[in-house]
Length: 291
Image 1 (cartoon, rainbow, N blue to C red):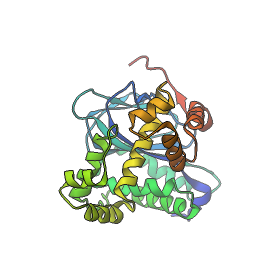
Image 2: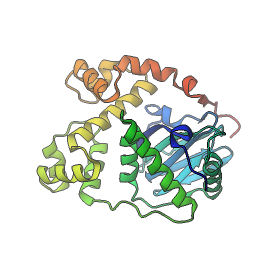
Image 3: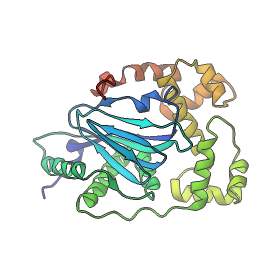
Image 4: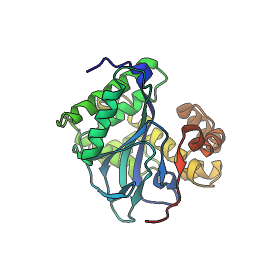
């Protein structure tokens, strides 16, 4: 095994959480048939729902607790079914670069090994692992970004060795609270509402979220709304005012301020940048023909 130069070799470009995917019209960005650029891999970890995942000519059933890896340049898409079991999953886009860097061949061999075995069944206890990975990889801190890379590689190497890493123990109250928030993205919930539906006190729920997700319940709920807003900005022609109203923000100004706080961009600028996103990242959108 060669020493790996992380800073030169592996980069996590994006980690996203896609919740309850059931409207192709509203969330078509996540159901696009597309491929990524040279040396880019995308992990999909499904935690709930029913549907299909198309990778090249292969069509797989989506089942909770399964993990897939899409290799570079191979078209893929999540295909949903309109029923009472909408798809929820995490997606991690990362690249392996620098042929001259030590350890690159080892990592690419690991990826080939995992791809040949997929889908990999790891169970449903990795929600918090991927949530933590998401927080670290999207942080402005270079230390946290590097930590996310090491965290991801460690996880993949253990999988490659044929073992299933022990998942982070879940918490029934946090899981229920997350489901309640996801079901009410287009509604409005107070902390007391969430705690009451979870049958715990507000202070206890706040402590659980701090321990499990290192955030407060209301902040997590707001972030879910911002992720929904990002999807609507990318996938629809809804105005910023309409999106703010749909997501129950106090006003367009309030929505814009909170959106920029979480993403670093105003909604209008975010929409414009996403329009050119696939060109910047080497992503190709492919017409669905010949299936």
